[in-house]
Length: 301
Image (tube, rainbow, N blue to C red; front, side, top):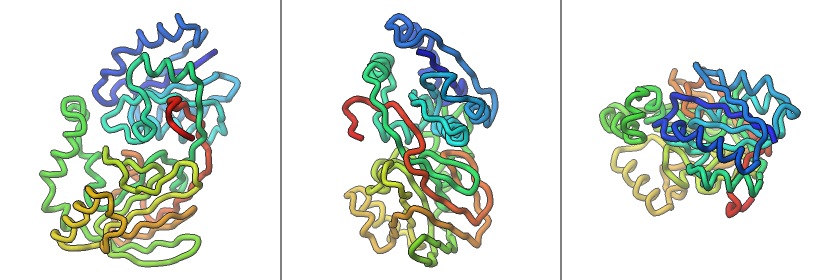
């Protein structure tokens, strides 16, 4: 088989990249592949434009090596190019929410076993205006932290770099207040909010089950809003999250929809899989089963 590695060499801690030569050698020795092409990204959108040039006949599968931002670029090109070949994801970023949702392997032995088992899954992808996302859109409190952490800090401290930045900005972040108008296929409502997020998987920022009903094959996006509230009320939301009861908290609004439009009076930066989003309003919809990925044999479809 023929495969293409798309590698972000500056992603995460670079531990994964240092073992790639050995991994590719094992893939060839085990006769999993006969041809391996490698493409290294140098700047933003390189992975997107490379994937956009591909056709299904070019390769039998693609391997993504990088974090959520790299996955985002690859799936964007993948959807626009109408590809159907499977994508194998090697989580090489700082947080890797999308990969961790599927418990994708980080070690060579388990990764090769996943390829040998050749179990694939078609999953939904989100679209926001003219862009795509694999995992999450978030706006409001703490949602711009990922843009402020340097690459050096990510390499040195991993996810702790995000948490440290968030703690330093805690007083400012607690004062966040957004005026939102949300329109879905069945409802229109307004919210005064601290934070909103639209997710495809249930994992955001390294935290599991933020949106507990999220299903990557249900053709819906999950919207979670933390309403504007006092600090003690916000602590109550966090306590309920620890007990996995936060969706029932009075300061949380949690819905699912196939499409939604969000308008925001404030001019804020919002997050799209770790990258900066464009201006409001934003229109979000689910594209059912648009991406074909390798998953471990023990993960159910």
